[in-house]
Amino acid sequence: LRSWISYCTEVLFNSSAFDALRRGKGMPSQMKRHKTQVQQALECYVTRELYDVIFQWLKLLHGEKDAKVDKILKELGQSGFTQQSLRMRPEFQCPQEKAMLELSDLFDRIDSGKNRKRRTNQNPQTSSSASTTPLEKLLCMERIVLNINETVEKNLRSHYLQVGSFQLTTDDLLDQIVYVF
Picture 1 (cartoon, one colour):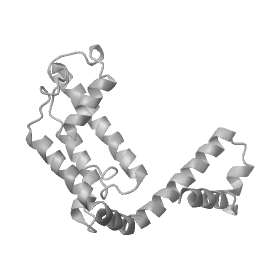
Picture 2: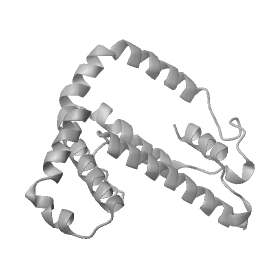
Picture 3: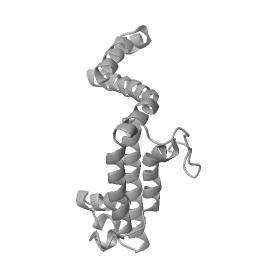
Picture 4: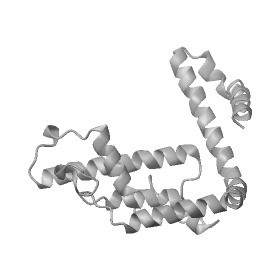
């Protein structure tokens, strides 16, 4: 699929639709960036169209393994993980509802079958059907990390702490992500 998408990108990028871009005096890095963007758009379109067919087949193929993972995740969720039990630094311990809500976007599609739900309590630019393409999943993870950072900064400010004095390290962020999941 990836080689087919690459081939289609080359054909599309070499078509007359991109003549003006090729004739322009753009830098090679800009041309490469534009080509990557075209490839990402094409990949997103193709994977979105294939998702319903492939996902149903994968659910059947891996249903037993999926049930085992679900059972483990439910047991972990019921074990009462808290930010304290994950030994997060106290200044970073704060509610992460926004990040958890954003995470639910990754799983809404699984729970809702073919019905694409729209969340209405968010900004229209970020509100979307559940993530189905790799790019959508990546952007969702980016929004989760952004929500975590914003919530931690808000928590620090509410306790009259200087945000710059407390650096959220990769380990701290990973703790937060584990907690959100």
